Length: 295
Image 1 (cartoon, rainbow, N blue to C red):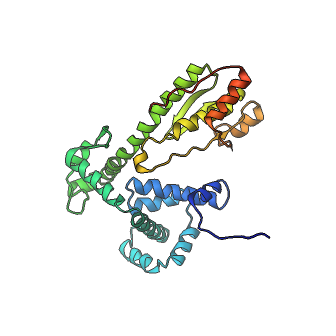
Image 2: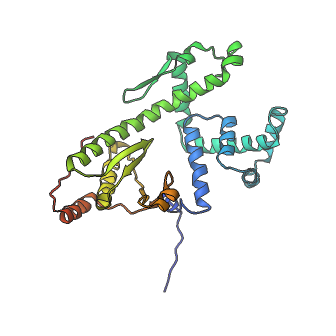
Image 3: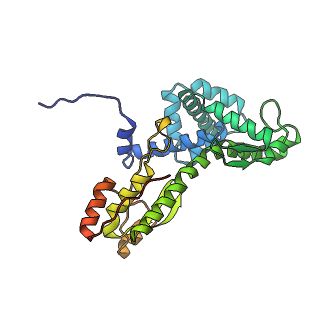
């Protein structure tokens, strides 16, 4: 007898569906929301970001209807009369709703953004908790009013630039953490591959994404090695687990190069490093050992 039980969907359930419609589009929209708001995007700019990333007018209409945002839409229509067209008002209405929901779900995040921006205004730089700092001298030179916006002539000439600099002030302290994690990984992986005498090599890295040239006999070993290194728990006190996905493109034929070059490949399961290393040693007659993971 088959018994089906319902349970709330987890983030892991959602991630398994990330390559399929309609979830593929939802993930893209969710990613846009997360990065934009974590980096201090204001409602107006956030609305434009949603528009650029494929959130359609039909999506806006559906959200306004389902979330009962008609009154908010009406208020924005009066407030932005002559400044935004009807479609722009729909986007900023949805953007404000998403923004409010995001910050109500992540307590303290909006305060952190404001704190970093105010620090940049007061000191002309911001500093990450682990040391690196980013200069923001323009923020110290621009005169800001009590509303947090450039005042007087500075508002006319420097409003957009000041907004960009404030975004830099709040996102630099986050992005430097990515560098702190990524660079030691790059160094350890490249040194290990070199020490083992493998033909595979890393040829590019963008943000948190690594690009490798993999030789067929080394593929599973290198995939497992990357996962082993990049999922190492550097900050266990925060309970943050790093995950790794792997996609492989076979570019050995002209047809595949035309189809897959600069595109995502096919997802693969990544094995355990100790098991894959044992398999490789047996296959190749080697005696490679895993170096200490000192990051």
